[in-house]
Every structure is written in C-alpha cells, then in structure tokens.
Amino acid sequence: MDIKVLEEKKNPLLQRREVKFSVSHNLGTPSREEIKAKIAAYLNSRPELVIIERMRSEFGKRETRGYAKIYETVERLKSVEAEHIVQRNEKKKEAKKEGEAAAAEAPKAEAKPAEPKK
Image 1 (tube, rainbow, N blue to C red):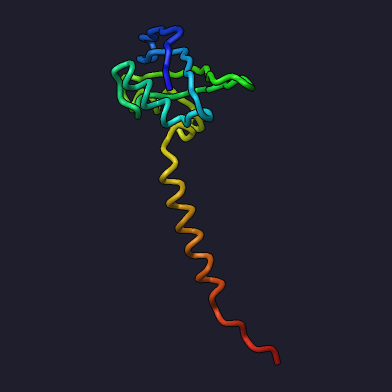
Image 2: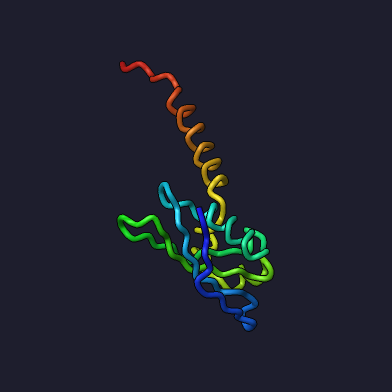
C-alpha cells in the first residue's frame, strides 16, 4: 500500500492541515485505521489527530482517493468536527466489546426454564 499526497494546505484558523491523498493497493480497499496510520506516519503526526472525511474507490481500479484533516490537538478536533465524523474515525474495537457483552447477556435470559402449562 503506497500513499501519495496530492495536495496539502495549512488552515491556521482551524489549527489543522488538510490533505488530499491517493492510496494504491493490491488487495481490497484498506480500512480507515490502516490509512490513518500511514498518513500519520507520512506527515509526522499521531493517528488520533487524523480524521479521514472521505475515501472513494473507482470500480476496477486499485486506487483510493480521499480527503483527510490533521489537527494539532485532540481538543481542537472535538470542538471543530461534527460528532458523527469523529465517531466514524474512532476505533471499532470498543463497539465490538459492547456488542459482545449484549450478546452474552441474551443467552442468559433465554436459559430460564419454561413454566409447565396447566
């Protein structure tokens, strides 16, 4: 997976850098987490400060183009970005743990013995 930065702009008012990028890949489209890590390493930042707003792949091509924002602080990121964009860019491991906990509770409720009919 190779990343090319097509355009980079500094936005001092919002304390961030705005990046248009292109990723060439051999297998399927890489996840947001993989791309965030690569962009952060390429542009000397931390992955938690990178927000990927959009990623688009064309059918039949092994290339994904996207738009990312790199903030200077976490506080600034949370004050500027919309909540659904921040949630989309968070790690999904936490959501799986919550789902597993709910799934574990469901069989316990079903395990109650049925009352005999009279």
